[in-house]
Length: 369
Image (cartoon, rainbow, N blue to C red; front, side, top):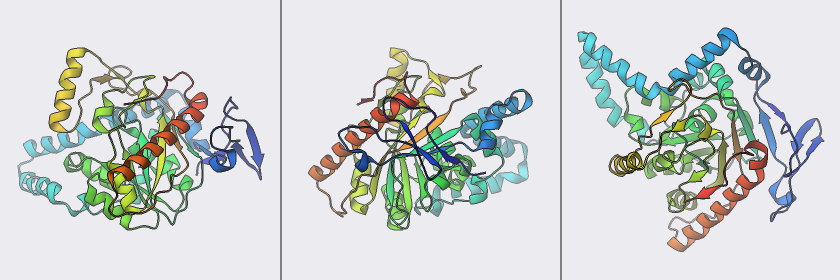
């Protein structure tokens, strides 16, 4: 059952509820940008069967919790399974070595489309994952499927659930909300070489975050777009319940790629991403984490959830702001990149200020570092 396009559940200081042609939507608030410019948001609530499943207790609730916990541990479980087979099954060792070598030379790492497999995105397991993390999608404006976009996704969170649960699963409603647009989450090349786990990432449409891969993706046009979690590994170290600190001031590569391709920039904020896990904090630990992040290009946050590493049941609200039109220039200057980057940050602040009272009333103010 596809997600139901409906109203935001409650009116707030940012707008009130209207109904047009049977489609309930949130009226645009007054702000620096006029309501006609901002448009009236479209809201895609989780489908009825997902909501019913998420509210069930007993065995269904236990099953959801177990699956969500295993889902969280995929990055560790999948490679460890391969190591176990390598140690225990002698005849499998040569094929495993050949497979691991292939992981580093696989053409899918830089082909711009990954190895997207639709049946993986529609597996029965996603129904339970999405019941544990119900996804609501909010569009400030319908996007033209003939264009390409770079979705600047914030925040990163601990394990970047937005790239998997929101963009990687058909059950999230992303295909219905962004009809005609194929969003490819961008991931670190290190993650795309981890045995077995990388095949899962490629199957849900993930591509490498390298310049080559992003440029190939955007060059395809016809709705092929990239979702980039801009703050990256460094931003994960600022993840905590209520924390809304983003690492964006000096992250301008995505703007350069947008200008070079003429792709529109879409500020995207995932409410709830930072509330799934809590993070241990200590000055010495933080110093060590920053050193490791600078040397290895990925962070090692020390986090915990319910009963250890069980993620907290959290609704994820993915708000896609109005696209920022970008004029194509194959060789943008630093000044041009800086101007568009500043415009993007202003748009992201506006989107957060508009929807925070509805979806994150207790969250901190947005901090961009």
